[in-house]
Image 1 (cartoon, rainbow over the protein chains, first blue to last red):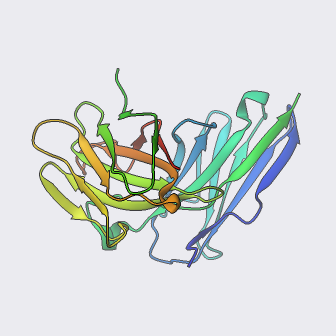
Image 2 (spheres, chains in turn brown, red):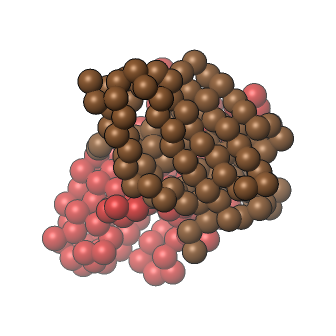
Length: 116
Length: 117
């Protein structure tokens, strides 16, 4: 049962353009969401997060939007750079039921390629 | 500025052998998590530990897998009698005590790649 879904396995964009990475979830108890970036043979690196009480969080070139009613979030990267080419994972936490356990539920990831 | 340290980075084991993966959390972090990534899959939660305590092992396979986080030393994920299906990347993550300003931000190590031949 895939509670966090990243339905597009890959995305290719031109350098300088916007990258939009989508993520859907099914568990309405999720209340905190994170995006991680991962290069081959390395661990995931935290990018940006958002609490369910917000609908937008921005950090430099990265913005995450959350639509709770649609159970959908997206990561926008503007402008995209070749160094952004990596696998991006969406993850979610159910704080209410897991308490101190910040157990992450991950999607399968999206491979982003930014063409020079 | 040491991050989460995992070793070995790569481990090859024959079927039936034991694999031990070690994880030292970031300084000041008292919560350790282990995740497994199978090929073409996302990371899957295995176990959550604090010092000398297993808090949540709901993602651990019922047999052959165990984890510990002793009072002194790194956390260890142990896989006994490995099989080919155990081949995967195993990631350790750590976080500070809950309630700090870091909130739910969790930091990952670079992973240990287990290959069972």
